[in-house]
Length: 492
Image (tube, rainbow, N blue to C red; front, side, top):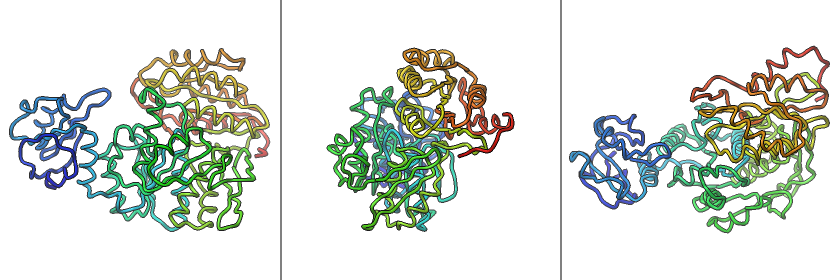
């Protein structure tokens, strides 16, 4: 594609060279540059793309895009076209939209944002719309999917160039609907800039990612940004920050929830250890909905999914059948067992998500709550004692263990968690080896207990010293069950 077409509607402060040159690909990683590419210099967290301009040119970049006042363009080889802009991230996002011919205009695009519930809600929407006979693309934490074709996800929301390329694949594969989790990082870093969102969904907001956003107001504003980009939005009105978000939003908003007079609401809610059940008014009649994921938060996620899919034309039957059959890996996922206690794996890895899942299981569990969890390394250290205190107050027994320590010392992370635990009277044990911690917790369980293994959810690895080793909480739990003494069948 000609450069002039790629940079249409992009902000240009200055340029040098041929703007009609043909460009093969847009790159932001100098290592992937090949002859004929355009290299966009992005200022990252660990490195700055402006430091790799010479390398990209040596590898054949025909065009280089730089931030204003970041580099003297006279130092760049004269046969290379140079474009200067005030924000290379926005420039890259818009140029990627142009390069891939604005693929998000070719299907209905739904963006879901919030601290918790994004993954589950997206899977619910996908399942319902597939029941309605639509081909659905999915972009999120667990996987990217084009219909039934699964592609591993490296981050919740891909970088803008990768995102537009994936959108083009989805459009070319005739996807009618694409549902994506939109992280606060993606919004703050303009990864979704230029996308044509038909519907935005807000689930909730709680303290998370402050190592990146610095303040809670910044975090809220990042989430609210989605509602200035979408044609309409659905907002959980029961969330304490919903009003602030709606004040920032520029699109029409419909509210959903349980308590605060929402436009779409649930009633007669029943929660057990294996499902959630509620009634909702649809087509002037009360319809009972059953979802095989326990917890009050499931009701909120299901309400959001119902709002979106109703707007997209799904029938009541599609919603009922879809929600009853939905499966979300690592989100309140019950490990199959014939024992008389329950083992659940959940992705809860922040103070709010851990508190939410612990309160949920405590509300319907007749026995004890045994919690196994740790905290990830190279992430916000301030949440570690908070999570220790939450577990100490809500769980009957806690096994503090390792999560993904990454480049940090696991023992140091555990010590910080323990600081919060010591503020409570909660019973706990430190078992640094995660496999052994899970095994010990399961051996400790007795009739009517629940063993909650939190933090990693769907992940199938444990990252230690920068190396990802195969590790799946669900596999470890199933193996531990095999080595327990014989027991009578479960009542669950």
